[in-house]
Image (cartoon, rainbow, N blue to C red):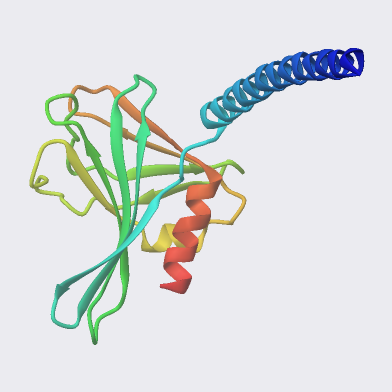
Length: 190
């Protein structure tokens, strides 16, 4: 009888060691899977493209609404530019679309008056008239009448925007197709 008790205790000790080892292996396995999941999510975060743009709505004055799409893009030199397409809705007046380019102050100065040249992925060249022919409110700002240009764009177009800066350097900005689609949505839906 004492031998049976000893066998049972020994068997329970063996089962306990086995379960402890199993628990340890399971804990290590779960940690490894967690680390793998963390690495995969980290890789996904670095490979996702940033959001294309931000659509906003403002009331400029009673009855006057402004809607705009805003995106930060870099030129070929790596300088950041805010690219803002907006429309202002004023009762009794036609809706106009303006494209504003804003560079970092002190880095670049936009030359006025100068039309903006827009080249589509299909090779079509369009122009947008300078809104500030006498000079912009700030030297790093250019604004162009984009109403007619929007009518010529297709949803599968990407664009290249080009102007010359006061330094006589060219400014070239690549507009992705996803942003062009958003601009068309801004024009037709809002």
